[in-house]
Amino acid sequence: AGMAEVIKYGVIMNEGFFCFIEDNYKKVLALDQETLIKMVERSCEIKAGVVSADEQEKGLRAILNFGHTIGHAIETITDYKRYKHGEAISIGMVFAAKMASRMGICDKEVYKRIDRVCRLIGLDTTLPDMEFKDMWEILQRDKKVVNEMVRFVVPLRLGEVKIIDDVDRDILQDTVQSCYSTNNFECPPN
Image 1 (cartoon, rainbow, N blue to C red):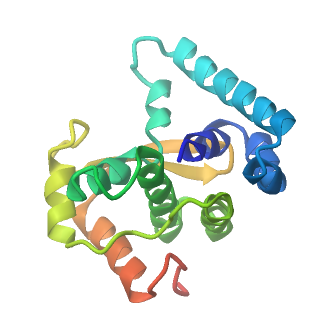
Image 2: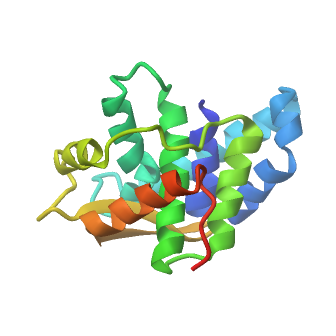
C-alpha cells in the first residue's frame, strides 16, 4: 500500500520517476533490492524538496495531498477497515486523474497511465460502492472546503499537478456516476 505514495511522487513532481516505476514494476513486485533502494531514495528526495520549499505549508506542500481528498472520504466511509491508507490514496489518485480528464484539465492518457501503474503494482483503483450523498457529506467536513467547493490536487501532466478549489458537487457526482456506469474506471467517450 505504501507504493501509492511512491507513485504519487512521480505524478506530482517527476515524470522520469513515474516512468522508472512504470518500467520497473516487475522488479518492484519481486522486491529487487537495487530497484527498491533507488525508489525509496528518490521518493525521499522529492518529498524533502517539497517540504523544505514550503515548511509553513502555505502553498507548494499542498500538492502532497494528491489522491487524499477522495482517499480520506473512502477511509471514513469504510470506517478505516476495508482499505489501508495507501490503497485508499491509490483510488483517490485515479479518481482525481479521471475527474481532471473529464474536466479537460489533463489528457485522458495521463489518467490511464496512473490507473495502469497502480494496478500493475497491485493497488486497487476501483471506487467502492457507496452512496454519493454519503461521500459528499464527508467531503463537506474536509478542512479545505469553502462554500461547498472541494479542493483537489489534479494532474496537468505526469510530473506536474495543479490545485483546484472550484470542484463542485455536479462535477464530483458526474465522475462518481461514470465510475459506476462503466463498471470500472475507464472513461466513456466524450
